[in-house]
Amino acid sequence: MTLSDDAQQHRLAELNVCCAENPRDPVARLICKLTFYLTKQSTAKEFVEHFPVSGNLDPFWALDIIASVNEKPNSPDSLPPLFRPDGPTSSYITELFRLVTKGDKPALQKYLQLSLRADGAFAEDMADQVEKLFFEHPDIVLSNWDALKNNILVTQNLQFLLPEDRKQQLRQKFERYCHINERACREVIHALK
Image (cartoon, rainbow, N blue to C red; front, side, top):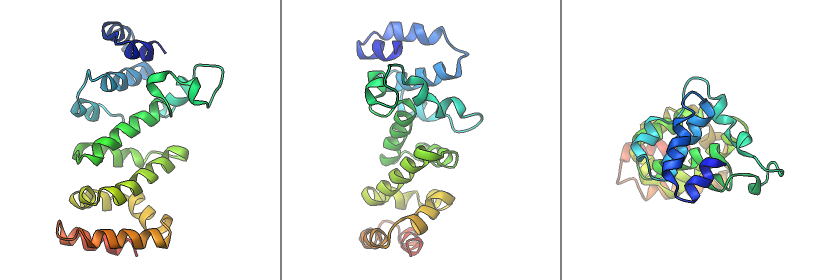
């Protein structure tokens, strides 16, 4: 709550002091890294480099629960304003996905690694984001197809979770983009059968 308040009030010096006081707390470190990125005190490159995808991710997955500090758990109003509407874990994932949609290859690698460790609502949200990537950014998909096709969850979602009408829409969409990368385009279309 303190970090959110400091960020919302543009008290960056106080925010930095608070983060400097908690260097060993894994939850505080994660919240500080996200806050630094959201307040533009760290770059996209730094955000991606320090994005947690290996080791013990329990603190990362628990951020949303920990951040629900008011009396109405699971309500958007229970979250500190900086992390609304979905919480810090979701904010982390959303920010990483935004970088993916801009063609950031290291962000895509981290995103794909994280997707393999996600479960429950986070896994569902990430699957929805990947579907959105295919529908809204076919150029990004084609230029990164080799990485995407090697992620078992991406290929399973394409083959088994998408309804046939959505697959058909995607096949038609990718047909229009085959001039970008013919091989990747044909492989995407084949994966959608």
